[in-house]
Length: 186
Image (tube, rainbow, N blue to C red):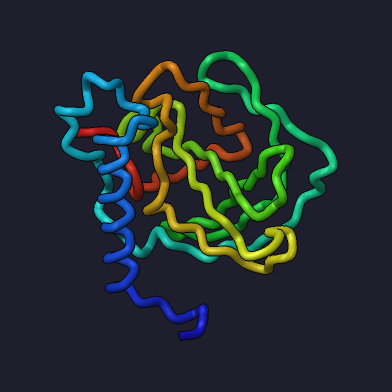
């Protein structure tokens, strides 16, 4: 199958498996962010319904990563990242961009995309959400990349104050609602 063909049935099946594995991790793994006393009562994370409209192709504009940036965290510390690529895409009929980062000591194949949107603090965690994915080779050499907001998730600090989570910088604050991925329980 060519890369531009999309099998929605297979995508939905894989997304469901991903969510089940994540729920199992939260419920039973010793590295779960949930406090041990909350794990027995845990019955799964809350998610928006899967929506293939939130799976978008983004144009990759490589950024000069010679300079690192410090992202503030939820515990008033900072973490060092490199700005790797500006990702331009259309969602909900709007053209917008997000910046993808890699850890300052990374190899450029793992992309970290922290963001806020119009659901932040209402339907989703108040400090924002993340997307992370591996790329084949250096992202700076790609023309496009698929962003699947259905995989957007809350950082561990949403579940436990013991974690220091990077806050999305203003350049990744979207003026639209992304009703996909992890959400707050209703």
